[in-house]
Image (cartoon, rainbow, N blue to C red; front, side, top):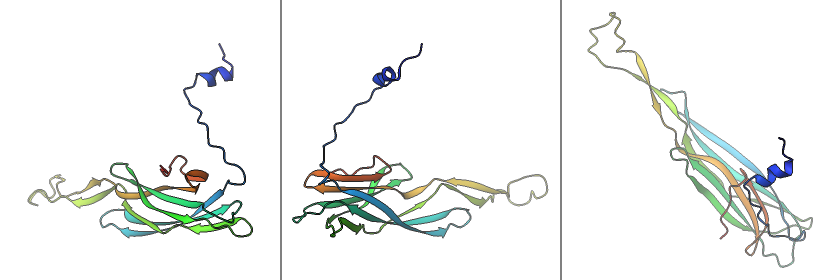
Length: 183
């Protein structure tokens, strides 16, 4: 038996949240570009590198300016711990919003840096035995690989909000759902 699409959608467990309505005069559009660079340091006896990431958010805002501008831009950059997968704030800040005559503003976050080493293997010489068994098929002197877990923090994403007092009038994040706690 085929069910109509509205019956299938009605059966799904989801909740619709009523978003606070923001008038078009108050709404601020946000575009974020990431200025990124990284440094790599070779790890001996492996094919892996320790990576240091440098990230800066270049934020472009558009909207209508006010003569008594009180809105602020809040930005946060998040990182993920590679050992326990915990997410933490790598950097955050708040900047007063100031639109130019064309209704745009450009702001930049401070540079955020994090360092990590991916999971890798280290080649070790196996020095078991006394070396007298050469040529008898004993593989005691062959090199062995040892697995090493990932460590450090890796860049995860960002969140940018424009606040008018406690009211959010513009918001974006990458990945979607990573958010600043404004409470």
